[in-house]
Image (tube, rainbow over all chains, first blue to last red; front, side, top):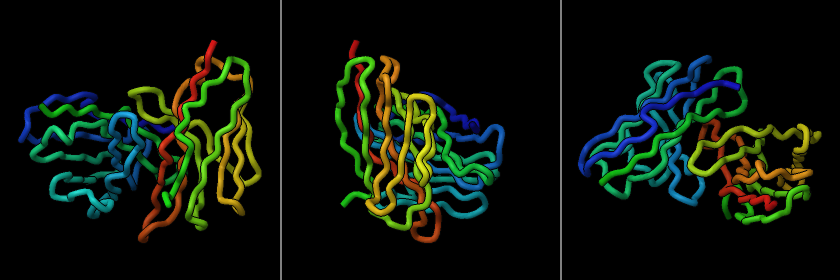
Length: 115
Length: 112
């Protein structure tokens, strides 16, 4: 299957700082990438759909000004959590859906802890 | 009603047992269906796609029932290593773009 990488794998930051998470498709071009959040013992919740070259589409209840998404190339999407607070602590996972792949392939996730 | 529903479990089964999970979906226009496996504190990994005719991969069999809007996963001869959370995923058009919606997952614990 396709390979998706995510960086960093783990980040601990102080409340009020911004954190950028990168998601890369390593061996294919991803026209669409997805950002999910998963709280402990809960399901994956789709936050937004990132489309290369256009604005991201956010799910209901997700603040677009707080979770900034940029998909500037066919292999890279970034999620920036601005002014992070402890309640933003979660497991953030990206996935990619390439031109030739029907399935979604997930990155290894980023565990964010906001103190 | 949730778009994709699963019994959260846990399902505790002995090694060697056969276990089945179901997943229902509400959008009749859904196009593609998948089963993912997620281990604790890890990302989901694709287990198998689900086709209308049903498909099998070793000890795993997936089936789709479009009329009743559910998909199923059957695991035969359960191994300890099968212990994980199994997520069903449904792909379809929503608001002009394709989106994949996941169920909450069914936790399986295989007991020695």
